[in-house]
Amino acid sequence: MTSFVIQCKRFSWINIVRPDREDIAHLSALHPEIHPLHLDDLLSKTERPKIDREDNYLFVVLHFPVWDERNRVSRPNEIEFIIGRNFLVTVHDGGLRPLVRLFARFELYADQRDRVLGKGANDAFYALLDQLVDYLFPILRKVDSNIHTLEDTVFTADTRQIIQDIALVRRDIIALRRIIRHLVPIVSALERIDHPVIREDMEDYFGDTVDHVQAAQDIIDEDYEVIGGLSETADTLVSHRINDVMRVLTVFSVIMLPLTLVSGIYGMNIRLPLNEHPDAFIVVIALMTTIATLMLVYFRRRKWI
Image 1: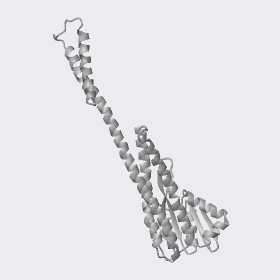
Image 2 (image 1 turned 90 degrees about the horizontal axis):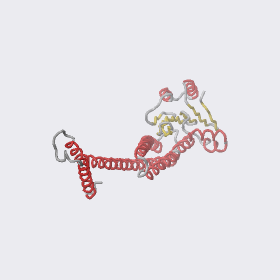
Image 3 (image 1 turned 180 degrees about the horizontal axis):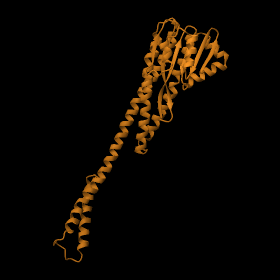
Image 4 (image 1 turned 30 degrees about the horizontal axis):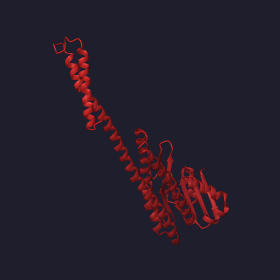
């Protein structure tokens, strides 16, 4: 069994980590009012957050970011809430640190448990949601730090490395932007929801959470614009450096063209001027050197090199 329960007065918080069929069957026995389709949803991944309203409870699916160290990108981590009149069920895979820490804290400290859980499902759900939303901001601060590092090194770092770093940060920002954008309408709906299990006085509390989510969305949208500008800057620098290399190679190619022509002519097996001259080689080399020097001087005056 991977179900953990905290009981406080008449309220219970059932926390299920990596559920299996036995966990869901046990939950169904405890709360037979939960719809079978919602029980099935607890065992499968829901692609988008949602709110389902039933007569006796709310079924809420939310996604929050979790850092994937191997691929260096934020992944959406799903958590399901079932909010009843005197119970709260949370189902997740254990990857959401704020939720894990909060559950452990309520198990250890009776005063905190009584202060939050003793008020019922409304306050417990709000406390969990508020902790999860607030956890977005350390993640966003890390993204800001990565962007500042890129801004400081974009003109000095190795081109290949800076392009790779920008691509990784940009991918992470896109992932976070998608997660937060899907979160906003669900939290906003909680502020306006009219349901028996949500007290009317909770509107202001959920409104504060909506403000936090919208602030997170504004931050990630700004980061998206900044990383787009950095990407364009890096592309411009790469293009400029490629143009510099191409210009130098073109200059050398143009200089070698007449020298190749002279050497080709004097390599022909026919009678040419200076064929019989004892210093013919030196004269030809001097001619080629003069041509190359004059071309370099001309290119220099035109500021092509």
